[in-house]
Amino acid sequence: MKIQIDGVGTHNKGAELMLRAILQHFEPHNATISVGKGNIKPQEYAALNLVKNPQPPVKDQLLYLLLGYASPAVKKCKVGLLIDSSGFKYGDFWDNSRSWGANFKESVYLRFFKKLGTRIIFLPQAFGPFSTPKSKYRIRNIVRNADLVFYRDMSSKEFLEAAIKPGSLREKMQFAPDFTASFSQGKERKETSNSFKRVGIIPNCKMLESDTFKSMEVYIDFLNKLVAHYQQQGLHVSLINHTGSEDQEVIKQLYQSLPNTSNVSLVSNDNALALKDDVGACDFIVASRFHGVINALSQAIPTICLGWSHKYQRIMEDYNVFDYYVQLDTNEKMLENIKRLSTEAELKSAKGRIESRRSHWFTQIANMWSTVDKSLN
Image 1 (cartoon, rainbow, N blue to C red):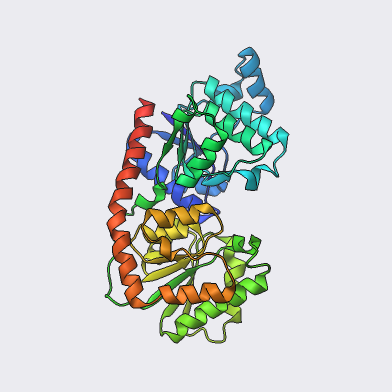
Image 2 (cartoon, rainbow, N blue to C red):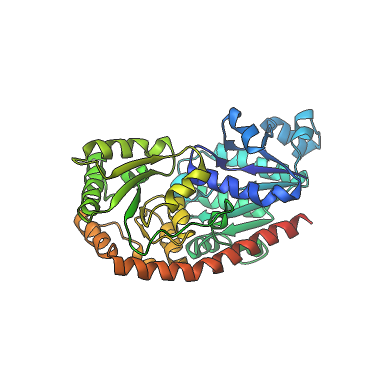
């Protein structure tokens, strides 16, 4: 079988972790894995054992939809399964800036693959909110053409149900957790000691879009104070780039602003597999990247989360550590909360709660993949 993945890439380590988790699952299936809409460099395809599936021009898609004419480009792109693994792409935040023309092309695209007999599945991702005509049109079109739509948190479910009326379309919607949590390299994280000696800080340039951090200078000042606190505690600080070029400037300016860098290390890895080890080397994490949070929680690493959307709140609830979600507030208030959560007693308590939830979510992820496999049969 030929499978096409949309919405993945290697420019962002979260996206790459999703891609590698998909590849890991389908490896035993003897399937040809292709990429349709994605952000992968040409030189990376061979190393990932992927092929590019060229998409027919819109006019060819329309001719096939309206007249049944299958051009050579249409015949070449046919796949048995189309997977969308965008992560967080559908909702007011993005859709309000999209043109109606882009939404129309997407509608044609999905209907085109549907007519080809392709199964269309949206893997677990965050959705919504949908409060405008553009965003409502887009999500209704997606659910109408999909065979399965997995949402990864209860807020996404509420947003979907507010946009989709009760009936057959809702029956396509199912819950499943973020599936990168169970992604494995075949080795377990080794515990070094019962004490906490190394903290990893994972920043996110998107925090600059919040009202809390109105400029790079304000964000750097906040992170600088955070690093200084951990240095005073005698901890080694790892500044972890969990996405790529997007966060590199934040880390660069932060490092340059530190008066003392003797116990601070820079961690930037182009390989998502190695990045999992980098996070696993930390005793606890302060993260603002969603898949940085997942990366840590899935390894039972205590994680303090500062997020800018509902997906961060929900994942912390899922692992029974919502009290480790720090609401955006004044810099002083956030630092106070982070310091409170960073004591050894607090971290040990959080670690136990996370460990008790991991196996539950791994089972849920296995159930999700089982549902995907059954739909292929």
